Image 1 (cartoon, helix red, strand yellow):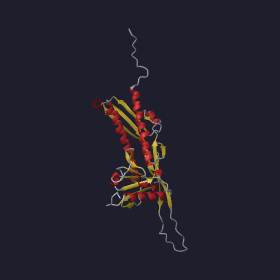
Image 2: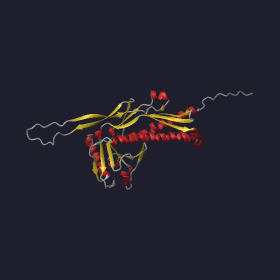
Image 3: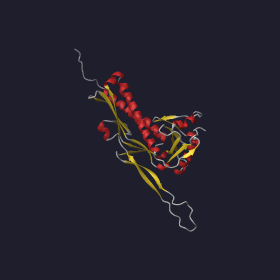
Image 4: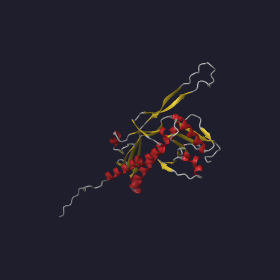
Length: 301
């Protein structure tokens, strides 16, 4: 009678190994492909690791002229005082998301559709949340009068010019955020190459005035501009104790961690857990300039 062994063969690829491969693919897609494209488009050169609960700040200049400058001959010129203050804008927090696929959904659609494909959708929604938080933050920064012109090109030129003065550097690289509808008329008559990063379309060196990034979170007719060097990415590392405690898979950057395809037998479902703590901010609030196309005007020339 032949000698038959019932033990698993050496080098057999197991279910757990395949699950780990999917998780590695997931974090590499985010940290090795998607996020770097956003950093390149925004010009982000500073990524700062933080500790949970650390307060984040932006810097703002406060003060005003004490007179109109008309000082009679021989009289003491009064001092106008300005102060550079840091303004707290909240704490960086760990964000968590969980997704579950029922046994019924797996039976109906198959594991790939019910679990793996929905993991990708979850990743897209995580990206969307990061984008929305950033644009909400930008929209609440400026309280100065906007640059108002009758065309998009003039508005962009105006905000670009103000940034050259604010940062005292003629070679400063600028980035402008606008609503797609604001630029749509211009794009209809121009030969423009658009690229995509982090779910957003952008144009490099638009009219020689910097990178233009389009997102519907920006109000139509409005432009928000800043220097690329003014943008910082803070993050909570997902490759330390949190990753070990929850068996998260994270890449070397530690921007995002995932545990995918684990069983919840009580509910007969397969679940995925994602954790991340990415926050895009600007360092200097005064370095953000707003422009608006005058009502009744169009974005095109």
